[in-house]
Image (cartoon, rainbow, N blue to C red; front, side):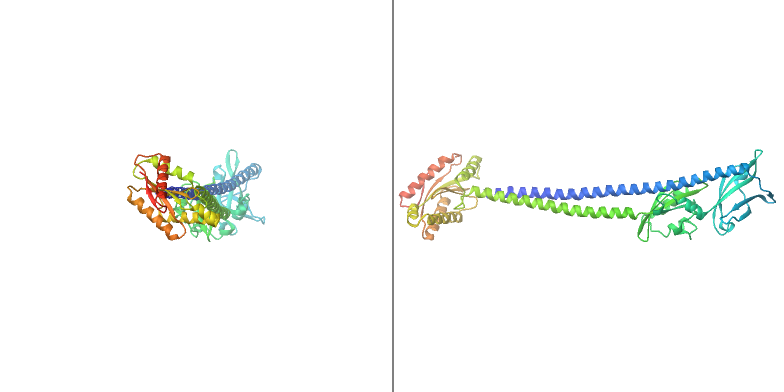
Length: 452
């Protein structure tokens, strides 16, 4: 019974340790998942912030260019001679890179005294689209003419993409309806930004429609999509010119590469951490096992393998004081007959072999819950657990004597005393068992006797 309780306590400790190990491993997984999610969140936020920074720079470039050109045109308009009027309105001069002058009749807000920016269709300008910046030439408080400057879409695109991050993406200008004002080399054959985006893979089905709705209302926002398996991001905001939107498209390869590396490192960390935890636990288990083994060895007699005198006293006194039905009810004191003669005749080595054999016989003839003690020399004590009355102790005593007799070399005498239900005095019980032993020896040895 005591062995079972020790086993239960040991199992409880093992289960507790196993629970702690599992908790630690789960904790490592949870912390790594949390860490990865936080890093992913930070990377996404940083990527979006970088994208917005690039777009803001493109926006500022565009606005700066417009302001500078308007100032230049305003200076020019203040001091230049006005062009002659044609029959259909104001004649506007436009120069291209080849210094060729083109004329056309052009309706402009500049005629109303306001600076204006308008689209220049490709059919009106050597096959290229562009924009026209117009400034009124004011004389005597009235707009008498218009001074203008033309930028082709190609030139404007070069200017717009001259930002720090532009090597990693493209800047575009399109209207709220999606019509491209300024395209980029990758998509120069497209006339509408939505035609470009419809070729992309939007894994969130609402992203495309959400973007169209946001652009239509003139608000800024993000769109995420995949192109040929690679992730891309797009940020758009009002350009501050008519209904134009300035947008920045970048590939998210660096972001995905960083996430891949972090995910790989996280897996390595989880595997290595789990391995180290398991190794540590195995080491602790080995240490506990060895200490338990050493503790048991310290409790046992090195020669016979049964309990030593000190350990047995602690175990038995604890059970005697515990009371109740589950306690020791009989005590046997055993002495090997003529053991001194064996030592003197055959030597101490033979005597040690006899003691070892005696320990084996006593263990075989009793139960696990019984406590067998080498009391000293050739004396042994057996505490029988959970037995009442004389019948069962007598049967065990006969079994022991028969086993000794069957060995052919060992005989013993046994003294037996019963333990009262309320008796707790360890030494008093042993004295009665010792007295019973002397009675057995007086009967001619190889006998057992009772002392009540």
